[in-house]
Image (cartoon, rainbow, N blue to C red):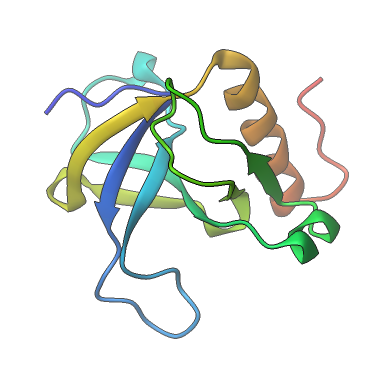
Length: 119
């Protein structure tokens, strides 16, 4: 399976435990293509947008467009970063640009430690 950084795929997150994100949902691939074709990819899930998310520094609002394949305003949940098997990947629906990938990487770093900066 050829899965690249910046692509948006529908992924099956079930079975879920506790407060983990669940069900089939769009997800952005954030792992680098440089590290090779590993059996796992690092991803951040996309969820329905809620205005209260504007107060959460780990969520990025994303508007639907022809490139990303989303059907509604959504939120990229950088706090729910995961490494997932290719077996969970269902279908590619779109992609995002390098600017958004860099922003996602920044948000992920901030969830690990608020003083981190990727400059």
